[in-house]
Image (cartoon, rainbow, N blue to C red; front, top):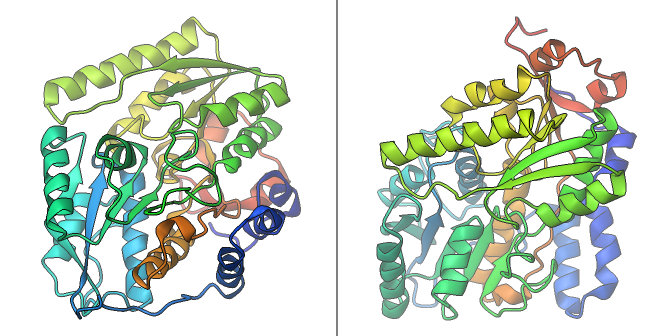
Length: 405
């Protein structure tokens, strides 16, 4: 069920892009950057046309991701769709992938096998899952590509890939775009929300939204002690959530874990056994009355339902930090902090500006989406939550396994 509007009360609780832009303009030193950012928000069209390199050859893009993860796959899927929509690539066929469950590395390999037109190309040799492939081999491969000057942009999907490229490898000679990183500023990838402070780096930023996200969940489903599991302060948006919790007057029961860095079956099973133990600890020992499912914690979509059952048996609602598909798999509600489809034009526009000669560090990078609410009605019924009329009206998607009600 989709509705074409968001209520005023929800809009007040989340940060609206145009409002953020208006408040931020006067603090920016680069006036030209301000003007071009305004133009993008007002026109929603590409500010620069597709182009080839000065010698007529194509721009080659390297792709660095963490592992197969539906949320990042969806981000890449819509980024590619926007490349098609704006003329940067040409494809005679529809992408043979499910937007909600795309393996990003497979998508890049698919694109690498295609003639995408005159402007850009992807390479199988510059396509990495750093938690699946050997990380040292990934680093060495990227070093060689940078040294050989045969890649023109490194597209990092997430915080860890960006840390490898920017911090570990210290890449400065190739433009780097950082996308789907929860908080690049706290991670030390960008010096500010508006501009990275590094000549060759652009990061999409929107961290303010997480503070308001927790407030939204509290206002609609009041809790006193919310559980959170994370492996990185910045990926978990912990600074924003702690600030929100202090403002609300609630507690956060935090558990920091080591992330899964391999695809070896035994280690994968050990990871999920550990995660199950941590979830049970939050319920039985920490006595939480709400749980926030953090980014990149449950990496396998097929495990979501069983893992969340730990909370539902105890009558505990599950909120989502990032990823609408988690609601479809059994989480109770998400008010989006990122949206693959609405953010894609902003990211492609940034890439367009870079390929047309702009330094990445001079390209405005803050884009906060309008709120998008998705609710699993089966879960709300099971937990006996009476969903308010205002919340139902604000929801863009109501999920139910029962006939389309």
